[in-house]
Image (cartoon, rainbow, N blue to C red):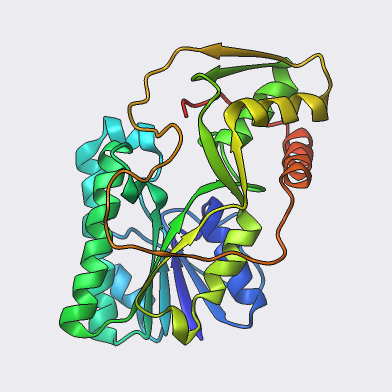
Length: 296
């Protein structure tokens, strides 16, 4: 198939582009900036999802689109509601209109487990709206879709907005980690390579018009995660906890709100969390990146 990946210059998008290429698909990446991860055989298209004409040109001849371009950082979304609604909702609408007119075989929307939550602020609200839009387009125009609700991602190419990345960066640079919260926050971490591989798998016919959860198989509290990092790096890494309200983030589970129910997709083989952390540490150490720990 020929696929377009919006937001394909980013963390998750670039890995989905690579997994699609590996699976034998023809891949075009659409983003506001050129991808530093572009592989041989992939096409780069620089543009904005708010430019409907550019979106239509990019989607011509495509069979499917992975729509990841969005304001995805919760803190940024909370501070910029108008921008978040414009990019996340209107941007999605522009893609849906082009996909409908060009008769694409599948529209794949990157969503989040936050759609189930009463947390997540404007980010959650826009993702709920986008899920409803793709569902309505299927019912009204027959445009097949798959919604992918991602959990807590980590892995190579992540930036400072990624929780695991910033924890590791701070631990390496300062031998001290400040965590905003009690340490009891629970997440199901999933390596980005596992998530990307399963994202390609959903092009199969049985995943049409489905809501799929892509979360990790290792459920862990922030305190346990920090302890693992300290054990990997050595006992001299200090850990401290700072009070933080839970505005925008969930504590134990996102499942408070009830949109359309989804199926959970897992793999029989997956990247172990400890090995994944070692991989991230190696990447950070080689690149010399640092970062501040976001609230989570």
